Every structure is written in structure tokens, then in C-alpha cells.
Image 1 (spheres, rainbow, N blue to C red):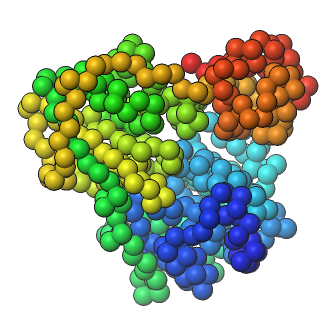
Image 2: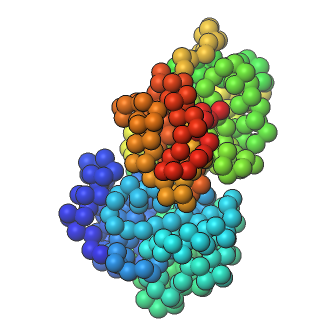
Image 3: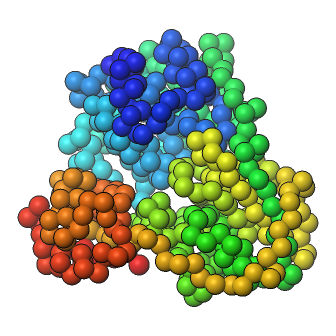
Amino acid sequence: MQLTDQLLTQSLNNLGIASLSEMQRDFVATAGRGGDVLLLSPTGSGKTLAFVLAALNHIDPDGNKTTVIVVQPSRELAQQSDDLVRRMKCGVRSMAVTGGKAAATERKTLEGIKPHIVFGTPGRLLDHFDSKAIATAAVSLFIIDEYDKCLEQGFLEEMTAVRAALPEHALTTWLISATSEPAEISHFINKTRLCRLDFTPQTADARVQRFVVTSPTRDKLDTLGRLLTTFGSRQTIVFAAHRESVDRIYGHLKDARFAVGKYHGGMDQADRERAVYKFRCGAIAILVSTDLAARGLDIPEVKQVVHYHIAADAATASHRDGRSTRWLAEGASYAIIGPDETTPAWFAEADSLDVADVVLRRPAPSDWAAIYIGRGKQDKISKGDVVGFICKKGGVKAADIGRIDVTPHATYAAVRRTVLKGMLSAVAGEKIKGQKTIIEEMR
């Protein structure tokens, strides 16, 4: 497949994107000339779209062989990348393979889909290589996305094993990173033939307005509530240092009747997916998370982040703040500083914000509610099926339906809260594509 101007325009139109950024244009052009490439570009700059577009040159849409393997550090990033390919509607079959779900089920899906491009966490990719569910003989492009994060998570040995399982000859390798000096490159790329694209000087930091919010007590929950009150219903990520802290903050805000969800590595995969969907579709306004959400969550509507706990270092702080500057947008970052804490260097020039006199109140409920449908791709359910079902059986207009995500075993859909009760009542006991299932509001 050639990435022609027509295919590029069609893919961008399907994504609702007007044009590529300078980084994306340079990467697509450079990668199109062949050879190994190292791309350095900050969080939120659109690296995934850049390498997916360039990878189309390595895919035969009429073939049934996997020719592109992409290693990624998290389940969510792999799933989002897979969703990006689907939304491009460019005739390419893709699939995400990750932990958190049965490998046997994925093997069956791989056999049915016969994906051209596979996104996956390194351990699960190796599982499918070993079982021959993914044949590697035809792979011509190997990509490690968020390479620096993969190293941080200790994936070097597994990534090296993935590389060793791929053809030795005629293999192109791209490393994608958000930092300026990724280590251990020689495990994957011959530096003498490497093309390096460095866009790290164009950091997202210049697009972030920073504020320091002083908490009079070591327990910052009251200050956090007052700060969130000033945001109204604007979508916000609150970062905490530990899973236990996330649970505690989430519980406090939920008791205070904020529209809030939580997200951390100790949660079941299904619960994490639901939390992200509810946040992405606007059913909840606040997501409390560990640094797991500092990378991989691409939610352009997020305009501010809150550091409930200060990041361990400047790089982590930058990744957190990058959630508010997706696709070159401008954002805001708030650090809550307790009486025993010192303002970190990366907030040294931040403005001060006093919320002591803010009257704590719960924002108005979101216009959207999220529903769960217990059928998904494995049941041959599509977005069109869901829209038709909700409209015909639920008596809802298409304009009252928001984002729809169809996963292998379930579907999440957003509907306007004003029609939720009547819709759920109308579809009770009804079948979707002849199949009985659970249809309920996600709590």
C-alpha cells in the first residue's frame, strides 16, 4: 500500500484532522525513504498518527499476513492505537494484544481478523509468537512506541526477545520516544544507519500555564475539592503517587458527589476500560489516577491536570502536564503544596492561586451518561448496530447519542442524560441483533 496524497487526505478526514504537524510530515517523509528511524518528540505531539501513517507503506491490504509489529508499554495505549487505525478507515486490519484478557480468546480473534498490523505489550506478543498465533515470517517493520517508557518498566529483555523472533533481514526498525537520550538503542538499531528526528526542543511545557495552590493542612482533600469546584464540569485528571491514595481521593470526592472515576494498575482491566470510557465521553468530569495515566491516554478534552502529590521528577511532571496539551493545545497544571512540602523547581515560576474562600459545591451533572451493553465485536456488534438499536428500540434520536466504543466482549455508549431513563425502560428485554444481553447505566 502506498501512502498517496489521496489516502492521506481520506484518513485525516475520517479522523477529523485538518492537516499534519511539522513533526508528523517530517517523520512520514523520512520513514518513507526507508531505513531505521529514531523519533524524539514530546508527549501529546501526535507520534502515534505519524508512525501509523508511515507504516501503511509496509502493508498489503489485499494480503492476509502480519507485516507490522508495534510494541507498546500499556494495554490502553495498544487499544487506542488499534482504535486509531479503525477510525482511519483505510482498509487496514489491526488488532491489540495485551495482558488482562485470555490469550486463547485473542488467538481465536487473530485467526479470524488476520491483522496486517498488531499492537501489543511485549509479554503478550511473545505468547502469540510462541503459539504461532502471530506468524512473523512476513514482518517487515518493527516499531517500539514509547521506547523510554518501555525501558522504565523493565521490558528490555522481553523487547529483545520480540526483536529476535522477527526476520533478521529486510526488517526496518523505528523507535519512538518522548525523551532526548533513550538508552540501549544498540539492542534494536545499528546506529551507523540510523536517521534521527529530534523534536524535543518543541516541548509542551511552553503551552502549559502552571499554578501553585497552597493547602493549609497536610491532608489536601479539602483544598482539592475547592479547586475542583472552580473548574465546574471541565474534564480534569488528578494525579496521586500511590494506588491507595487514588482510592482514598476517589472515595472522598465520590462521597462529596463529584462526578469522578479512578484509574490505576491494581484495577481489573474491565474496570479501567469503563473508567476511561466514562471520562472520555464526558459522563464523569474527574479522573483520579496514578502516573499510569501520564502516558497513553489521548483525551483532547482534558484542559487541566492537578498534582495532588508532586511528581517524582521533572520528566514525570512533564508527562502528566502533557495530558492537558494534546495535539498542540494549551493547558493548565495545578500543584497542591502542603505545609511540609517545598515547591519543586518546575513550578518555581508558577502563579499562586488561593482557593481558601471558594465555597465547596458539587458541579452540575454531566449532560451525558454512559451505558454498558454486554455484547461486543465477538458477537458481530458494530457501532452502526448500536446506533440503530438505541434509536429504533429506545426511541432516541441520533443527536442524543455520543461516543460509542465497541470492545471484543462489550460495548460502551454515551447518551444524553435527559433521555437515559426512558431509553433504558424502552430497551429492557429487547435483543440486539437477535441476542439477549445486559443494558444498563455504568455506575
